[in-house]
Image (cartoon, rainbow over all chains, first blue to last red):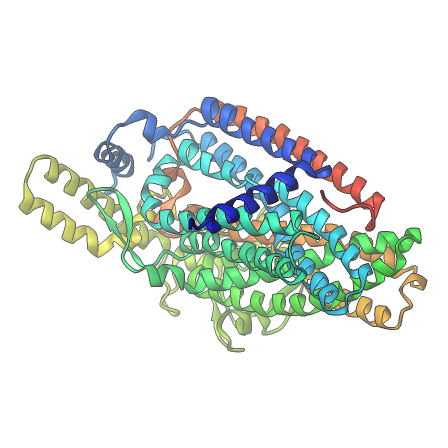
Length: 80
Length: 513
C-alpha cells in the first residue's frame, strides 16, 4: 500500500495558503503595495540607479581587491 | 588627501540616513507590537473571552499594515552599499556576510510560515497552534534584529577580525567575539526594549483616541492596561540598558560621549547636562564657553561613564590634542601612526607586485605595528576626528528627556486604568494620544546619536566615511536621494491613510483578511 501522507500534508499546506490568499480583503491591497514596492525597488532602482559598482567594473575578486587597495593607499604624501 | 568629491560623501550619508530613518519608523513598531499581539492573544486563549479575540485581531491588523509597508525597505540600504559605499562593502564583506545572511534566511522562513498562520489561521488551526505562531513571529522578529545589530555593533567597536592586506578585507577570526561584542549586546537589548516601548506607546495612543471619541471603550481600556504594564517594564528596562549603552560608549567611543554631552574640556567629578543651549561658535581648542546656558546634575557623567563619581571624563579637546596627565594620546600622534600604516600598506602592495617576497614581509610586519591607527592616517587635520557636536547633543537630550518621561506616563495610565477612571481623565488622554509620536521622536533621536556620533568613521578608528564611499559624481546620488524622498513619502502616506481607515473602522470589523 502506498504511503500518501506526505502528499496529503503538501495538499493541506497548499489549500491553507490558497484559501488564505483568496479570502483576503485588506490583505489584497497590502500585497499590491508590497509588489509595486518590490517592482520599483528591484526592476527600476536596482537595475537603473543602483548598479553594484565593483561587480560591474571588475570580474574577479582579485581585481576588486586590488582596486580597493589602490583606493586605500592612494594618498598624496601619507608619510608627511 | 583623497581625491574624492566630498559633497558626494555628504549626499551619500544623507541618503543613507534618510533610508535608515524611514526604515526605523516601522521596525520598532514591529518589534513591540508583535509581542503585544502575543500578550493579547494569550489572554484570549486563557480566558476564552471573544472580546479579547476581537481586540487581538484589531491590533494584529495594524501590525500587518505596518509590516507590509515597512517590509523590504531595509533592502534599499543594501543597494546603497554596493553603489555609494563600494569600498566599504568590499572591506567589510567577510564580516557582514554571515550575520546578514543569517538574518535573511531567518526572516524568510519566519515570514513564510508563522506569518501565514498568524493571518490565515484563525478558525483553521487550533487556538494553541495559532497562539504559538503569534509568539514565534514576535520572538523571530526580535531575533532577526540581533544580526543587523551585530553588524552595527561591529562598526562601532570593530573586534574579532584581522585586516588582510592582500585582499583589502577585514576577515573574521572569531565569530564568538563578533557576535558577543559588548557594544552589539548593549545595542540589541537597548534597541529591542525601546521597540517594546514604542509598541506600547502606539497602543496607548490609539486607545486614547477611542476613549476621547467614546468608542470601543472596553477594548481601549483593556489595551491600555496591557500596554501600560508592558510599557512600564520595558521603559524602565530601556533606562537601565541606556545606562549600559552609555558606559560602553564612554569606554569604546569616548569622542561620541564628549560630543553628546558638549564636553570640550575633560573633568573629574563631571556633571551631566540636564538641559542647555550650545554655543554655535564653539570650536575645538578655542577658549569659548561651549554653552550659552546650561543646567547640570553634579557627578552624574563620571558615574555614567566610568561607574565612579570622581573619575575623569575626557572632553573633545583632550581627545583631539591629547592629555599627558590622563595618558590620553592625541589625534595628531595617531595620524602619524596611521599614515605610516598606509605607507607600509602601499609598500607591501608594490613589493607583491614586484614579486619581492622579502620586502613584502618586512612591509607587512611594519604595517601590523600601526594597523590599529590606519583610519587616522586618512584625516587631514586632528579636528576632523570630531563629529558634529550639536546634532548628537540635542538628539541625545531629546531621547533622554522623553525616555525619562515614559515610565511616569505608563505608571499614570496603569494607575488610572486599574481604578477604571481613565475616560474621566481628560487632561491625560491628549498626552497619551501624542505619546506614539513622542516615542517615534525618541526612536529616531537614538539612531541619530548612535550614527552621527560615530562620524567621521564608517568603521570606528579604522575607516573614515570619505574612504568608504565610491568615487562617484555627487549628482548621481542627488538624483536617487530625491527619488527615495518621493517614494518614501508616498509609502508613508499610504501607511498612514490605510492605518487611519482601519482605526476608524475599529476592532470588531477591522480584522485583516
